[in-house]
Picture 1 (cartoon, one colour):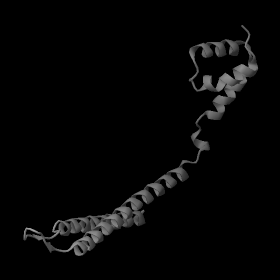
Picture 2 (spheres, rainbow, N blue to C red):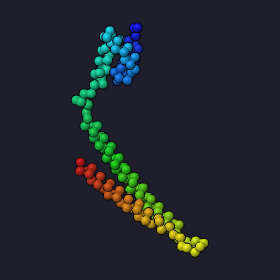
Picture 3 (cartoon, rainbow, N blue to C red):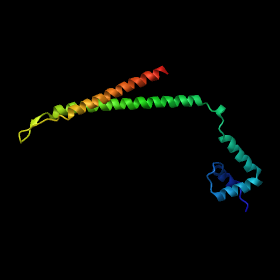
Length: 142
């Protein structure tokens, strides 16, 4: 069965990437035995997709990746710092807004759990600030 070069040209990228079905692979291989122009097209695909390290400038890509990783780490730490400080402030405000009151049974009710929670958020923010400082110093040394 004679397959046209147009159909083979449609199948060649799949054949080249080794993702076509076995039937298509056999058809393409049979056609390539007899058709010089399709073989030349496949060779051209091999040249186009061949990795040539001397033609690719790797260092700018590496620098961009490093800068992105640095900015991600800094952004994460800044977000953690902001979130911790906001939570700490909210805890202190909630403690003062809720205040203390005497329940109907005569017991004093105070939201004491907000005080240690606020301090926990404060120390979490402090750790984030220290980590952010270390990351900033480390980035400047490079």
